[in-house]
Length: 358
Image (spheres, rainbow, N blue to C red):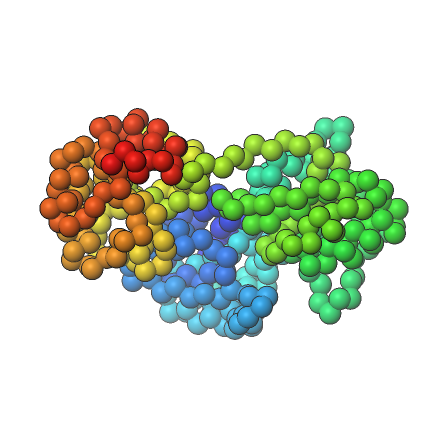
């Protein structure tokens, strides 16, 4: 019986570690944070118990004491209990508190580190938090403090290189004014990043003097990066017509398609079109299904019919006229029929025009 504290990373489900993925596949119980991607939860086995213990700033939240109690309760009952946390468990994640509670209850704990949002989110926005001759150090600070009473030493913070404020977008006016008051130049570059590493990531750049007005409509989850590195302008993440789409492929040798679609920013899951896969349509919006053979088409059509799957908002993409004919025989209408993988990828990249090629 072991509790595993797993860092899921800052948002993009592809950033979880291999160890974290492996444990999710065998976990008996998964207690997960509010912002955890459905794509990660879909890795769980069909009989796993999934419990949302997230903290909602504008709604119902599960108290930390209750989370600790649940870890202890299931830790005594089940062989593999996962606590799935955003970012890294030990970076403003209260993982230490959860580990101490389990230890006091005699339950073994293993920690699986994750990519902290303090590093991963700036990276996705093209901001290196250290850079030779610009910033030789960085400081990670919580920007969320209770009752508006700041305990931060702004006199010390104002003298440091790169500052990364987590969960601080609501306190942005206080953060910027306090840094300026304690000697930081008003012209210091600042970047605010909303929903970092997700396909809908949004970045606003300015200075300590201007960023409050420029980022007034940003919402959590957001982070703030202050320092000269925020002005380097190394943006690399580009959008694609399929970025953020959840795309299903059969569990066959489709490495070429998987790699290409992932490079476009899509989230690709391999499926056997089995009973447990019906959870995909219950939990998430499946944007596209790609069928590359008649066998795959037959398996998918039977799956839809047997489990009464609503595919009305899912694009079915076929390779081969035979696959399309089979689907039509089952009453399913392909959104696209092409002759090979290369043609499929070319038309997907030209989306939304591809439907003209049916």
